[in-house]
Image 1 (cartoon, rainbow, N blue to C red):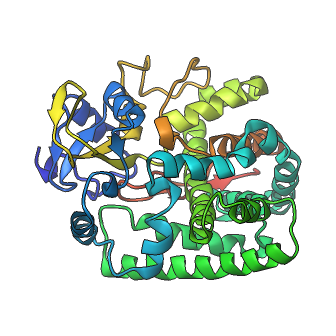
Image 2 (image 1 turned 60 degrees about the vertical axis):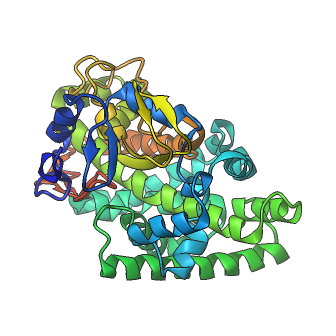
Length: 406
């Protein structure tokens, strides 16, 4: 496979990547992609097998000596970034084995479905207040005016950050996450490093405040775990920073792509309006239909056989979750948007040890938002053409013109 066979930088890829994923699925095995210097998995059986196998890791330190880890870091242009290397590249997302499990256990109690259900009242109140302001305007950019604001408020409320900082944290998160795409320019690198530094300053201040005056929030709980010796101070800052990153961008993206899917499939919109009880299934289908995080990398920590082939230690894999979610071998009418689909065993949240910790929170946000939006905007419709994010790291609209009222 040449670079031209799969080119996420091509114009139009962000708006319609599905034909490119279909072409990859038609190739035998796990094709080698020069732009990634690794092999791509796009069929759901292959992606799931790699995601579930603990011999397939995120951190090259699991198989390589320090000098080789440094070489890989430099080759990926993830070096000379002191704050990024300290708090992003060592986060729970990039940790494996017992250390990953230990960090996950420290935060998991805050992300159970029961615990998060207590947030429903907060989310509902915020959404209703936002719609009170927006509906009289008639037309809005759904991304900028609504979707980009909600996740930051909710995840900030959970962690304990100042609600006034939600928009700024969303911007910082986008700058950090965007650097994981294949296009790592000097300007992107500088923005990612500065955003990480500013996040660290903010969280250190919050840590000091909650150490003196604890509250019922995640920062206070994590300080308790730190004092109990369950994690180090840097691990605490890195973990909360990662939760902030994950809680912002991907939820914003899937809100935008999900609403776009609903409004471009009027039969499904009518079905949901007629039966609001379908909302949980509709949200699940939004995640399957257009996964907000299409791509993650992994390494083989040892020589192994998987996906029908032998692989050497250190082999790099790209897991294309978005492509796997359109695999016709796993989903009937895979390219159709069907809010009644059940069961819907998609991989938008990943699988295995690194399965998304915040999946229940993302679904809660979307169920509340879309329920209120459909109830209060009977004339809801697109008011123009969506503009989509480029690249492979994230999938979602940059702008989504929306008519709320006639």
